[in-house]
Length: 207
Image (cartoon, rainbow, N blue to C red):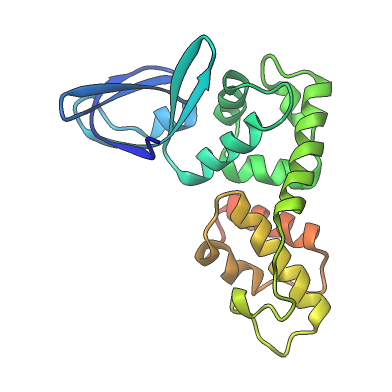
C-alpha cells in the first residue's frame, strides 16, 4: 500500500498532479481542492494516497488531507459512486462541508455536481449515514475515553462519545473535535452533536 507521497511537485493540472520521489514520478488523480493547496512546480509537496484497482486499470488518487481521503473512501463505498464522481464531489465541497451535508441529510446539494443525479445523491446520504452509525461501536457509556467529565449522565455521555466516534470515522482526530463537543449542550442527540460540531468547524470558529 502506498500511504503517502512526499517529494518535488513535477506536474500540476486541474485534477491531476505528479509528485517526483527519488527520481520516480507518481501521477495522482485528485480534486480541485487539493490542487489549489499545492505550491508551485518544483516545490515540495505531500499527498495522502489511495490506490484504486479494477480489472482494466490501476489509478492512484492523492489528497492534501486525511479528512479528504476519508471522505473519498466513504464516497466510493456508496453503490454507483466511482472515484471520478467522488473526486468531482470533493472538488465542489470541503471535507467539513461534505460531512455536514451528509449529517444534515442535504442530498439536494450533491446534485449540483456534474454527473450526480437525484437518486445517486439520496443514496450517498442514506448509505453514509448508515455506515457512520454502524461503525460507531464499542463506545464506553461513561465517556471517559473521550475525556469528558465522569459526572456526566450516562445517556448524555453515550451521545457525546458516539458523536466523537462518528467524526473520527470521517477522518477527524479526537483532538480536533473533542474540545468542540465539550462546549456543546450534551443533552443534544448524537446526530445534532455531529451536525453542530461540523458547523463550527466549517465556520472556522473551532477555537
